[in-house]
Amino acid sequence: MNSLAQMMSHRGERMKKETRMEKEEITAWTKPLENTENSSTRRRSFILDPSRDLYYAWITVMVLPVTYNWVIIICRSCFSELQYDYLSVWLSLDYLCDILYILDIVINFHTGFLKEGILVRDKKQIAQLYLSSSKFRWDILSVLPTDFLYFKFGIHTPAVRINRFLHVHPLFEAFDRTETRIPYPNVFRICKLMAYIFVVIHWNSCVYFALSSYIGFGKDQWVYPNISDPEFARLGRQYLYSFYFSTLILTTVGDVPAPKQGEEYLFMTADFLIAVLGFATILGSISSVVANVNDADKAFYPDYDQIKQYMKMYKVNKSVRKKVIAWHQHLQINKKMTNENQILMNLPEKLRVEVAVSVHMSTLSKVQIFQNCEKGLLEELVLRLKPQVYSPGEYVCKKGDIGREMYIIKEGKLAVVADDGVTQFAVLGEGNYFGEISILNIKGNTSGNRRTANIKSIGYSDLFCLSKEDLKEVLTVYPDAKAILEEKGREILLKMKKLDEKLAAHLEAKQQEMEETVLRLEANLESLQTKLARLLAELESSARKILQRIKRMEWEIGLWEEEPTEDKPTDGSEDEE
Image 1: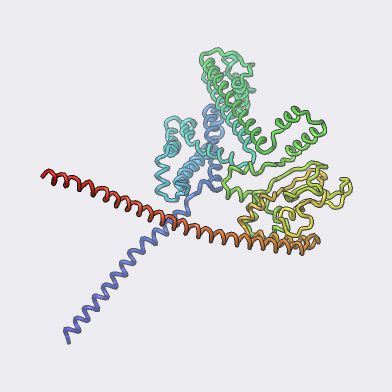
Image 2: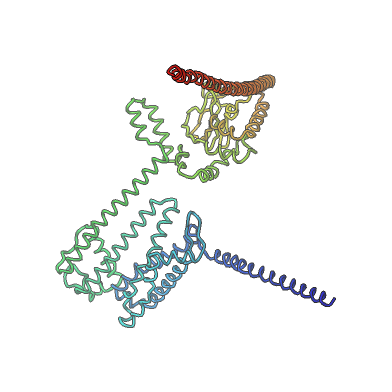
C-alpha cells in the first residue's frame, strides 16, 4: 500500500511539472508575438505616406530653408554691410534652417516607399533604402558643422556654410508635386521659370559687386561706382544697381560700359554664355507651355480649324457658318465639353466610374424611371451619358421622329412647340428629361417609339444623351432592373393614358407563347441531338465491327491460299522416289 501511495504521489508531481512546463512554453510563444504586434503597431504610427497631404506639407515647409540658403548666403558673402548690420538675425535663421535640415533627415528615415505597389512601413527597410541612396550622402554633407570654421576665418564669413546648398532635393520634389496638384500647372511652370531666372540674376549681381570690390569701386566705368559717394554708399542702392547691371548683361539688352580689365572680360564672356543658355531654356519652356495649352484645348474642345477648312472646301452657306462659329465660341467661352468619355479614357475603369459618378450621378438620379435602381446599374449608365450642346432655335427632336435616345437637361431652357415652331406649350428647364419611354420598348405603348412633340432649344442648352443601344446593353447584365424599369414605364404610360392594356396583354401573351415555342423547339432540338449522337455512336460501333470482320475474313482467306502452296513441294518429292 505504501509503495502504491508513493507511485501515485510521484505521478501527481510529474503531471504538475508537465502542466507547468506547458504553461511556460505557451507563455514563451505568446510573448514575442505580443511584442511584435505592439512594435509593428507602434512603428506603423510613425511612418509617413509620401502620397499624403502631411508629407506634402512638410516638403513645402522645407522650400523655405532651401531658398533662404541659396539666396541669402551668397548675398551676405558679397555685401559685407548686410552681414554686419543684421548678424544676430542671420545667425538665428542659420541655425533654424539647420534644425529643419536635421528634422528632414529624421523624417526621411520615417517615410515609407512603394514596393510592388504596396507601402513599405518597416523601419529597417526604409533606413536601408535611404542609407544606400545618394540623397542621404548629400543630406549628411549639407549638415556638416562647418560653422566651426568661424573660429579660423571670423564670424563674418558666411561662405563657410556653402555646404548647405547641397540639401536641395526637397525644393524640386515640392515643385513637382505642386505642379500635379494645382489646377493651373502651366501658370505654375512659368512662375517657377521666373523664380529660376531671379536666382540666376541675383547670384550674378552678387558676384558683380564682389568683383567690383576686388578690382576697386569706381576704378573704371564698368565696376560699381565709388562707395565714398553717399548716393552709392547705401546698401539698397548697391544691390539694386548690381541687379540692374546684371539684368542688362544677361538679357543682352546692351547699354553696358565696355570692360577694361581682364577680370571684367572674363565676367562678361561667362555672362554672355549664360545668357545664350538662358534664352534657349526660356524659349523652350515657353513653347512647351504654349504647346501644352494648345493640346489641352484640342483635347477638351472640337478642332475648329478642321471644321472651318471643311466648310470652306464645300462652300457651306454663310448662315450655317455663322451658326457653327457661334456654337464653337460658346464652347470655348463657357468651357463646355462634348467629349468627356475620351478625356477620361486613360483612367482605370473604377476611377473613371468614380469621377463620372461624382459629376453626373445627381443629374441621372433626377430621372423618375431610374430612381430606386441598384447602384451598379446607375454607375454603368453614368459612363454612357454623352453631353451635347444645342444652339438657340435648334430642334432637339421633332414630332414623328424615331426615338433612339432620351435626354436629360443639365443647363438651359427648351420649349415644347407646335408644328409652326412659334407657339409654346411648355418650357423645360434644368433637371427635366424627355424621351425616356421611347427607349424602353414597352408593350402596349400607343405612340410606339415615335416622338410625340417638337422640342426646341430657346438659348444654348446643355443636355445629356442616353441611347437605346447603351441602355439595352446595360440591362442585359441587370435583368431584374430591366423588369423594374419596364414596370415604372407602364405606370407612367398609364398616367399619361398612352398604354393600351389589351394590346399589352395580347403582346405579352404572344411573347409568352413565342417563348414557350422557343423552349419547346430547344427541347426538341436537344432530343434530336441526343438521338443523332446515339445513331452516330451505333454507326461507329457497326463500322468498327464490320472492319473487324473484314480483317478476319482477309486473314482466313490468306490461310486458305497458303495451304496449297505448302502441299505442292511434298507431292514432287514423292514422284521422284
